[in-house]
Image 1 (cartoon, rainbow, N blue to C red):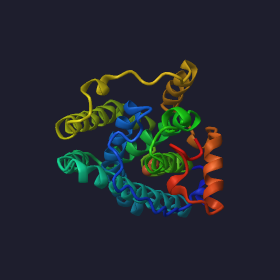
Image 2: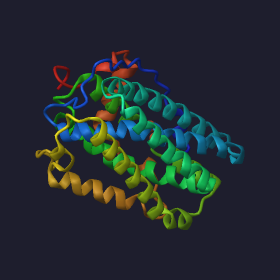
Image 3: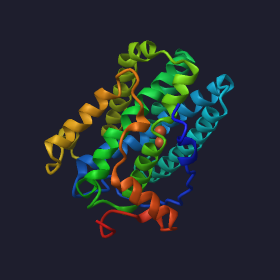
Image 4: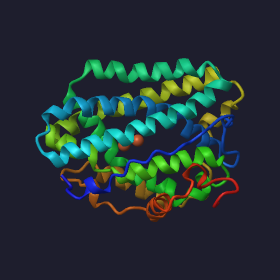
Length: 282
Ligand SMILES: [Fe+2]
Ligand SMILES: [Fe+2]
């Protein structure tokens, strides 16, 4: 357990509103906008699943520091899920069929929750959360390319979420290590976890294609926008692989400079609902 993290988790309620946001909210990088919309849907099911698992694990936690981390983790994740629901609600107002897609995605996680053990759920949370820092670092470091031309409301939602994922990067693995602790069990279940993630993303692809007719078909397989150096992608890959090693400690990973900027601006009382994007700080 990384003992210092408990003090670092801040519960932030940010009053986002997404009324009328376009589906492809970043005309400069529509492929990324499409991918992030999938993240919004995915996060609702995923974070609900993680919260159920961690709550169910809490009676098995006998260290008050780990228990405090578990509770703060659930609190942050619940707020993320709520904000993504608001985003998805705004998209569904324009494309009502997407409500069914969200229900299917939630059912995808509920089925897993029923089918597998608590140790499996905690391995899913601990394993996936521990690769978020290298992945989200890419989006924060190259935010001008990913978010710069985007609707500031949606860009700000993701920047908040990615910063808080980095902030609580150790929490789920701490809970897994405390409650279950087997590295081999986590490793053995990696393929099943990766398969479940891939199936969820395929489900969203199909839902978007069925219910959002005005997204051009080629966008789903469009190459990523150029501008991000190859080395940055390799760093993500190496971060993901490094997170699979025994003894990996997410708390020891360095934090992107934007994390410090974002948290300082929030602490100073800035409006974080429109912190970056088209016409704002970009
Ligand atoms: Fe989250
Ligand atoms: Fe998280």
